[in-house]
Length: 187
Image (cartoon, rainbow, N blue to C red; front, side, top):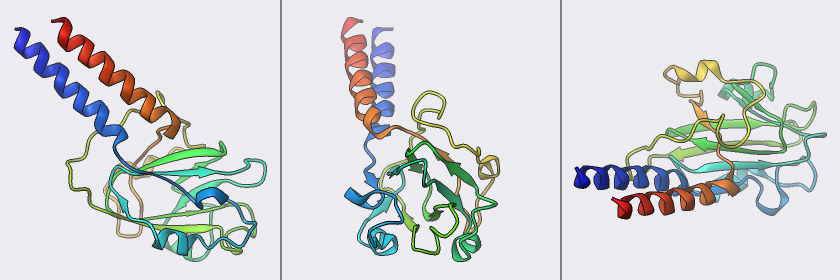
């Protein structure tokens, strides 16, 4: 019985630690998500390696910007009116849960046309995917929940996203590891 509890505790620890192992990419690096400053988000994305389990962190002034996940066609035409998901908190973390393209733009008129859009190409992870915490427990929720993302995505459509606050991810992992190790040694 004790061996079973230790095994369960170990597996839980691995699941919690796996959530935080993905890289966090702050979109635009120190500049953040903005239409000012001549930042080329397509060039920014081309210098990064994105993998399943990584997170994008959109940091911006919510009075002037937002982040909208869109289809390839809407990305090309800078159309944010039928977004897959809308983020409006000013500090939005989006976990990349499958390989393929993810398209984001600012839905404020003129911002996408000025270059505030990014195409992120996600590569497969070398490890098996691990379930992330639900958006209701960590981070912010999209203003427009992506209900259609639950089905199988097409080549130009991004799939389900989990929101994890990048600042809380490491803290939660450390708490989980400490709690699981304490639990495992207790029994």
